[in-house]
Length: 505
Image (cartoon, rainbow, N blue to C red; front, side, top):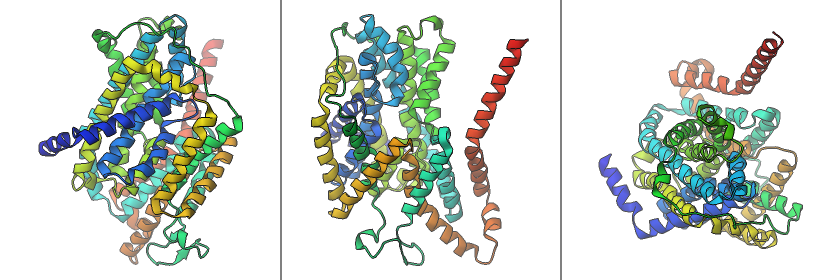
């Protein structure tokens, strides 16, 4: 283990990898700071670029984008009350109040510092907890892989808890798309319509780019905004002081723990982490009456929590292949396209790739800390860029990326088809994440089920599967996940009714 880490340290401090970390993090900050863009879009756009890179450098680039984007959304949240990402919505409340009080500099520095603490804490958890957890994967055979895929698809219930029906429709659509191509066992063609370009199935990366990038560009075009936002940096004053790094130690620790745990829970995401961190921070605060009126402590609570989700969400992604949120769902697609399979082999046979990637997260968080406390207001001015300039440039990158993957024009057509699908889904409030889950996990479940039927021979398939302890545990977890929205709503109603009775009394 120590030898692997030393080798990874030597690898990460090579000049080309250091530059990759810096470039990825800065690009992520730009994507995060631009309202309407997101970490998901940033990762999706840059995945094709990684195919010409070494897997280590490719993962480092995507990791930097992920970390940088989650922090970057706080810049416009503080200055404009316009969060770049959903994860920074609560930061906008107190951050913008501080800006109106002439404390924008303090708010920007605090968001960078708290984000750094959250990111560093979760990266430590990823480094030390992921390898032992990955060993569980050694006990997985085809039956366990099938149940794991079913559990992964049950995450739809948590991702789309507000409208489960729409989530299930999207998920089933993703599963159907995952069946296109050659049957993994029999070898027969399915839904290819005699098109050679579909023999290997629908390419995942063009689909990702279409659903998350092209769709968002269509939305922005439809809104016909000349520019995204305007920025007033006149209130940014003050210089960084070293003691600010430990301004709220207990807040950083509490929110970091919350964010990491939320990140590990598949489907929860950065927004939930930020809300819980903010809520718990207010509950433990000595001055809760200041929250919502420009509290620096409030900014620290939400930002430490949402950035701690980054490392936490990578734990199930790297160990079990179960994405923790939308970004890691896209990242998982990139991981597999780079020829890397989640599980134990990532930490053994491919340790020379995995450990430098994990260590790069420490550097990525440090990069945005340095940039954040010195140049955050400069990045905010990027949001003045007119959309009629941004949209064509990003569209060109998306098209080149989709084509370069297989040098196949069909991939470009698929990208635009999925972009249109994503645009329609956005209009009707459908989530695109279940489609990606279905496309990734569907083929895995298909192959595992076929293999399980062969292994079981004449034994009843259900009896064979659930006589295995891991399958039984995964079944129980899946059922609990599916019924989570119902249990949550029931609990809320019971608590509300008890509160009403107490009020009448």
